[in-house]
Every structure is written in C-alpha cells, then in structure tokens.
Amino acid sequence: MMSEKIEKPAPAVKRSGAKAAAKPSRGRPARRRPKIPYSAGEIEEIFRRLCVQRPEPQSELEYTNPFTLLVAVVLSAQATDVGVNKATRKLFAAADHPAAMAALGEDAIREHIKTIGLYRNKAKNVLALSEALLARHGGAVPADRAALEALPGVGRKTANVVLNVAFGEETLAVDTHIFRLGNRLHLAPGKTPDEVEENLLKVIPQPYRRHAHHWLILHGRYVCKARRPECEACVIADLCRAEVKTSDVPAELRPLPPGPPLPRETA
Figure 1: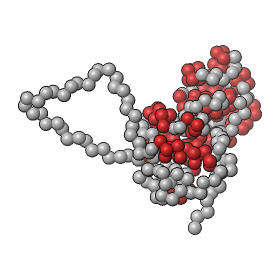
Figure 2: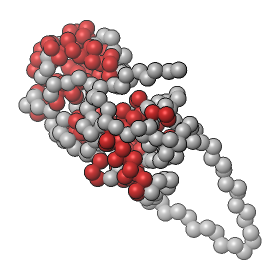
Figure 3: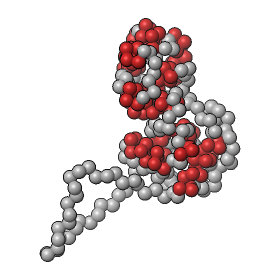
Figure 4: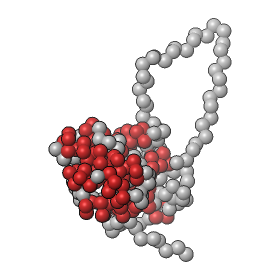
C-alpha cells in the first residue's frame, strides 16, 4: 500500500470582529464516501473484464464441505493457501466434520498443522470451534454472521469467506491483497479493512458482487503484486489510476484456466 503525502492546512487567522466558526456536533459524524477517480461505467468495465478472465472463480483453499472450509480459513491467517492445503489434506482425511475433529483432540490437530504459523493457538481454536458447533448448532456450520463470529478463532474476514463461498452471499473479505488494491487503485480507499470493505460494496455493480471477493484477491495475488505490479499482464491497465503502474496497454482479455497461472517466460 502506498503512503501519500498529505499537506497540513495553514492555521486559520483570527480576525477581530469575525464570528467564531460553528462547532461540530457532538454526535458521531457521518462517514463521507471517498471520492474516487472512476466513473460508474469505468467501474462496471473493470469488473466485466475480471469476470471474463475468471467466470467462476474458486477459492484456492482445499475443502470438501462448509466445516472444512471454515477450518481452512481459520488456519489461513498469516499463512499461505499452499501451506494450509499441505497441512489439511491429512487433517481432513482424519476429521472432516466437527465430531471427528473434537474426537481427534488438540494434540493430534497440532501435530497435523505444525507446519503452519501460529499452529499451537490455531489447534486450540479448531478444537474449540468444533466443540462449539456441536454444542450450539448440532454440528452444522451456521449461515449467519453473528453465529459465525461467535465461534473461537472466527472474525469478520473468516465469516465473510464462509458466507460467500459456502452459502453464496454477496460478502467481501478484505485480506492484504484486497486492502492493497482498494487503496492503490483508489477504487475504495480506506484506513482499515472494514473501511475498504464498506467502500468496495458501495461501488461494485450488483451483477459482480457475488464473485468480486475472489476476482480481487486473485488479481492482487498474481498481477497487481505488492512489490512490483505486473502491469503488462493486467487487463485493466488502461483504466487503472494507480500511480505505480508502468503501462497503459491492457493485456489480452481471455478466459484463464483454473488454478494459479504458470510462470511467465522472461527475456
């Protein structure tokens, strides 16, 4: 995410006889929608092209049901999808529902996921959320935000992923990639993930909200990368307003095969 220099306004000069400026109300000020340098038509075109690239985007986390999806997302915090998938293949072969996971126990869960960062705390959360699902929801993953966020180790981002992927809701989980894109592209500027989420949901056209989560994550992961965006591979290079972009020529717009892209050959 780029840091932009913000000039401080000059201090106001008090003139004799001038009326004092009205004090702002003590109530919470309404959050203004940030100005963005795109027309509604340009935003529509951005998501249309991302849709052409990946008509049916899929999560790169491996799962077989809502429970294994929930566990995989919990484990993915501060870890890569590739690393999580390597650990969960054997874990889910041994326990793919809450009762089996609870029976497995914390020590066995920890042994399966010890290659993932923060694995000790995550093992405790996986066991606790499995037990909570059994006690509160009959072993089923609830399709309700409040119920999901009440589970151990589950926050707003995790709940958004589960609601979107498992239940088809138009939610948007702001990870590091989406946070970067929202600010870098000036598409949905925000100081926090919650602000970026709120602002994105305001501008994304309705037909594209279902899959916007994955389109933006995959675009940030494989094209608009943190260190050096690969603008030559970007299908929205002509529309992009990022200061760091190096090309105004969009890449060829065509459907991509599922899965991560193959490494491009360099001269």
